[in-house]
Structures are given as C-alpha cells and as structure tokens.
Image 1 (cartoon, rainbow, N blue to C red):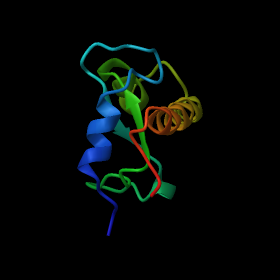
Image 2 (cartoon, rainbow, N blue to C red):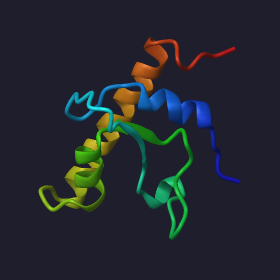
Image 3 (cartoon, helix red, strand yellow):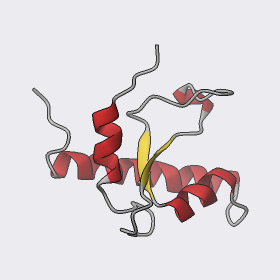
Length: 96
C-alpha cells in the first residue's frame, strides 16, 4: 500500500516553490514521476516523495520541453531535498 498523508501534502502547500521561490498561491506537492518511487500508470508515488512546486514549475517538470528528461529529474530531486529540509526546519515534520 502506498503511503498517503493529507497533513504532509497540506504542509508542503504552505511552502514557497522550491524551484523558483514563487509564493503565488499555486504551490502544490509535486510527486516524483520516477518508476523507482513506485510511480505507475494511474498511480502516484508515496506522499513522502514530494517537492513544493508552483504550477508553472510543476508543469515544466512534468510535461515541459525546456529541459532534458535527465535535467528535469535533477531539478525535481533538488526541489525534493529542499522541500523536506524546509518542512523539518519549520517544524512541520517532527520525529516523536
């Protein structure tokens, strides 16, 4: 069963875009599109494989043509690392 956490998704939406810094109200939890993260046809990766991205950056990473597939993956991975770090720094993820 794939891990789901509505509170984690909501916390991610409270962050600025971890690609461009936008705080325009369009930031969402962009899930990984990589097979290694159990992304499949009609299924999303687990909720802990997310990156805070605005609509523009999310669309470019998922369907854009500006970057190679490899570069889109690298950009998403960097945004993911920054997102998880921000969630911990802001106390939105806590270890009990």
